[in-house]
Image 1 (tube, rainbow, N blue to C red):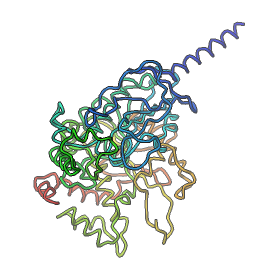
Image 2 (image 1 turned 90 degrees about the horizontal axis):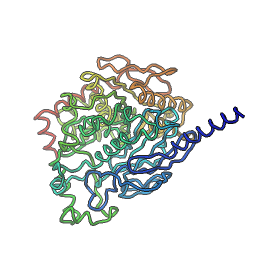
Image 3 (image 1 turned 135 degrees about the vertical axis):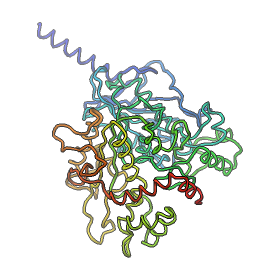
Image 4 (image 1 turned 60 degrees about the vertical axis):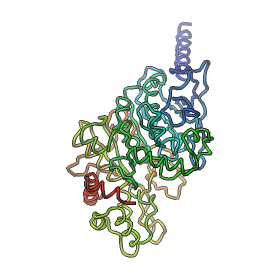
Length: 519
């Protein structure tokens, strides 16, 4: 009888603990999640008020409280954008999702918070590749947060700045991310997460946003680690932007916003607020974070040089053939003309560093687009932290792909932009035409390194090949994911130094005047 009573008590205790986890109380009310595969999953959790009506083009406001139990078992719609996304789209889009392995609220599991990419014009947490199951099973609470994109997320305008308490406008998408991180800080303990051990990670625009959050005083204290996949924002501002030089100052962004409103035939922001979100005039090239003096105080490179950033360990890297995403030039002559148009007096030196090839545009030419947008941004970020900060830097290069046969359309290609995301999340398609026998091994290793970094501020752990701390002075301190795991040198290091000369010049008065005279 005593054994039976003890067994009954254990079962009752386990049931109570399990129920505590699937039903959690956050600041706004009670949430009911779903138990799946040893995890508890909460989808469509509101972290801010719907940014609709008078809240369109305003900083996110606190989510409303609710009574009763809110069932959190479906992804919320993603933000308004072109194209289709799995969960649909709506202006009411500020929701997050949680995958937790914890069995009780007091476990203090490290937290990974994902910020999606999409050029700040697209993206949604419901994308298949962002399923948090595999990463959560490696011992982290995995959170994916949404943010406004396109003109709803990044429109600057004189009227919007005038009505803002801070007299700025345009960075609403970044403010959404900050609001999501504030919600995590306040509520993640209810899911068994540790609010003092949060790592943010993202890819492309998400990785760029990670670097911007690292430099934003508004995000101070909201995370303790940062991972950027093909991201970084260390180029100087420019009126006419290019990949890697995407940032504009508030006054220039306001002027573009004013032209957007008037060009669409409207007289004021009030007129645009009356339109349904999906009827807003389309725009290209307007949606990007800006140097507003508040969310992003200044050129990030200058901020880091002055020590004005949020000190954390970083894990940063990029893919071997990012240049494939930028409409590669069809001929060497096209490439040379494009370089001369963008880089001015540095063009000839850069063409020598990144040669075009004979008769066919070689990967070396695409590498200039890769490095301007991602490689130099990563390298500069890593060097700034390693040389000026107290935190460790871990640098990677992703080059996982089959050897494409000679004469095939993909001959000589490397790993394109975004390919690594499915490896990190463990959502690879084993039947893909580009699959290789080592994909599963590389994917598992990346997931382990990423979650180790969230746990320890260091990707290394038992049973893993050693990932060295990055050394700006040289040596094999970059982790290569290329069929095997091995440390190697900074890719295209000599060419990066030439490109660095261009960016240094661009931050001089002469370089700034030249760039802003280009139309």
